[in-house]
Structures are given as C-alpha cells and as structure tokens.
Length: 322
Image 1: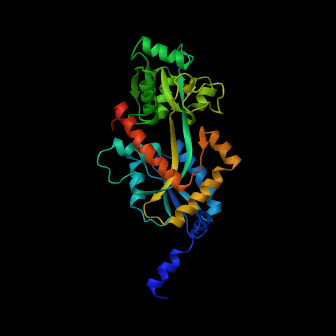
Image 2 (image 1 turned 45 degrees about the vertical axis):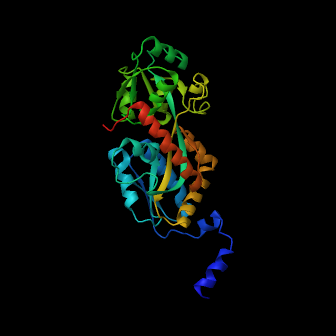
Image 3 (image 1 turned 30 degrees about the vertical axis):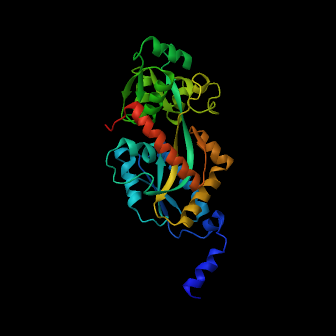
C-alpha cells in the first residue's frame, strides 16, 4: 500500500489506550534511577523503596544511583542529557524540578521542557516543632509570640531555598508575622540545633523530625497538610488556625524529554500500581509521606503549577543560592 493510501487508513483507527501502550514496551536491561542527594537521606530512602517495589513488575532491576551536588542539579542535568530510551530516570523533588528553575540563574536545562513526567510518587508534609523549653504549645501561641516581638523567635531551616525555609516564609506571609531565619546546610543540623536549644522553631519535614518528637526532644504544634496527619492525629493542622494554609513538598519520577510514550506509560503504570497497595501506603506513611501515584499527564499538569507556585515562594522568601 502506498503511503498516501496508508495514512488515511490509519487515521480511522482508534488510538491505543494507555494500558495497551504500557504493555508494548518491556525493558531488557536494568534501569537507573538517579537521586541528586546523599544516600540515607529522605529522597534517597523514598527512591530505594520505589525502586525495590517496581522492579518485579518491570522484570528488570531498578538501580538507584546517587549523584550529589548543586541542590540536586548534578543529577538533574545528567538525566536531561541521557539517552531518552526509558533506561534513565530521576527521582525529582519540589526543589529540583520546580524551585531550582527560579532559584538558579542560567541553568543548563529547563526543569519541565527537558523532561518527560512519569508519575508523582508522594507528598511530604511539614510539622512545626519547638524546643520543649519554649513556652509555645499551639500555632495560635506561636503567632502571638511572633507578633509580640517581631524577629524574636529564631527559626532554623535547611538552607536558603529549602522546604523548611519556604514553609516558614509562607507562614510568615500568611500569618502576618516575622521570624529570624537561621539557615543551615541541611535539615538535620537545623533539627540538631533545635534539640540542643540553639534555635526555637523548625518547620521540618515529618520524616526528619518524627523520631525526636516521639522521644520528647521536640514538641509538635502543627502540621502543614490540609488535614491532620495520621502519624500524629493529636497535632492540629496549621489551617485550623490560619485558614487555607497548606504547604506540601513532593517527590516524583521523570525521564529525559523524548522518551518513548510507551516506555513512560509502562513505568508510570507500575508506579501507580505499587502506590495503590495498602502495604506500600503504610510504608511511606511511616516515613511521613502521603502516597499518590499519578498518571504522566496528571504529573505534567501538577509540575507546571508547582513551577509557578514555587517561583512566588522564591520571591516572597528572598531565597538565594548560597
């Protein structure tokens, strides 16, 4: 059949549904999942849990590879430059694939245009924690103390542009208060100085504070999710005092732009399937995450909205690259 006759014939055929496209690609060698942060951290832990979960369904091992540096940009650039064949992925975060587009000047890639979204894996909720000696036991009391003495409370962050920084800055903006922000090189040292009493407050990812909260080294007074967290149901949502306040970061998987749609659909389908399993939802919940597992199209729409949202957070926080 000549090409001019073939095209009209094909035009009348229905498109394959996503499930059928997903089945049309089968990996024949291991897949690399790059992580831009150190082994043992929260992003790395989530990546390894996911890699282990999706390997059986894909029929190939998914190998986590850590490439640290430049706020995750080293791993991000490596994946942007990788062959778009379905065998190289990146564990993306709010920081690497939304914030960094506004935070860094002259990035050698674009966090959306140079990637193919695969699936949004989890949301991460923050918890407001204070040192036990601080006489603040609620978000209302935190606001009252901050308004009584603007700048009088020292709030530790994981660095300029970190989730701790942005959640604190968003709280300042929406609650009409002013803190003195103390930037550290990561969330762990900020929490360590809270435990030792060197700072008063931290807006910490739950995963980084849950053990100290349970051990009585920190007092939790509010969570940043729309509702209370199942991990600490006695701790109110910030939104119960500051209506509409929500701050959630996230993790998801992306591939290089140009990756075949069948490969994206296949990997996305596996992630969606494992994130629906009760045992997987329980496992990530114990780390302070909320399981999602989205389609590629849903993740693409979500990422575009996040790029705009986090650009505004960079503006109101005054975040800069240190």
